[in-house]
Length: 404
Ligand code: ADP
Image (cartoon, rainbow, N blue to C red; front, side, top):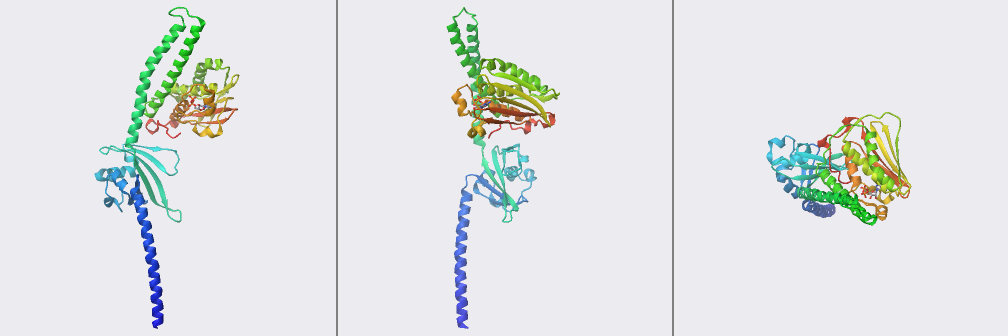
């Protein structure tokens, strides 16, 4: 009997010791996880499917201006926005539609993480970026959500200041550049006396360089305006054939100079009248044509085609030029990007053209993509919706399509 009690005692002590070690280990792991969570530089908020707050780190307390003890295990409802002023920021972070302005950033799909930029209602003048992710249990069932919250007010202010600086600088540069160009033209046309062919050739170089600077300044101004949401669209009924024909007319002299043939294929089918911003769409087509001519080879050709496909008009611009190397395909629509072969060819360019084109096409509710093979040529294809309903409403459109 004593022996049995002794054996049980030993077993009991052994289990007690094992449990004690396990408990200490778990405690250490929990302390470490808690330390990581509370020292995160971003705010972290966790809540279940009924919006009951289950975790909140100290950074989230700071950003959302709340005390963890006031919200932990509390169900947050949209109506708190009106009834509980101390939860004002928290309710807007949880329900972005309550904010003064909220937009979804990144892909337009329903996949996670869902990223929002939220401009908060007064008095908390702040811009937050929230990334929402589901939290799963072992059976892969959603048991709640996690929000990573960043205060991006300063970043946005710096971005705005940068855009404004570019806008002012570009505006100030455009006027004197136009005056210089006008003077070059006057001299070349012999308005102040007859010139020798050599003198005219020097003036032509000056005139070309001034035109390049004017183009760069215009591109910079357009991008700054787009990012400020001030590019200004005005939609009207138009015929796509007219828009492309007039862009082709403008491109003709450059094509002739580079011995590139321009071909316009528009099948005999009747194309519907569409609602577009004629000037901006013409600018997009002009940019694409300009690239197809400049990155072509002498004696090459550019073929423009239009067809109707489902709810869209599909326009393609095909060249047989230098093409784009596989490693650089995904950066083509990025601001200031110029591919290595284009830089080697050294035709002038800012790397802003396609960024502007993509923004214009997206504003019309269309899309743009391309296929290219280095040394063989490229085809850029874009779509424009036929029905007006497919054009995004101004407030829904993110003028700045960052992350291209
Ligand atoms: P830019 O032409 O002023 O450099 P873009 O934004 O219009 O700027 O084009 C970005 C880059 O994409 C170009 O520098 C070039 O490398 C590449 N690219 C654009 N269009 C073509 C084309 N049709 N063929 C080959 N490369 C092209």
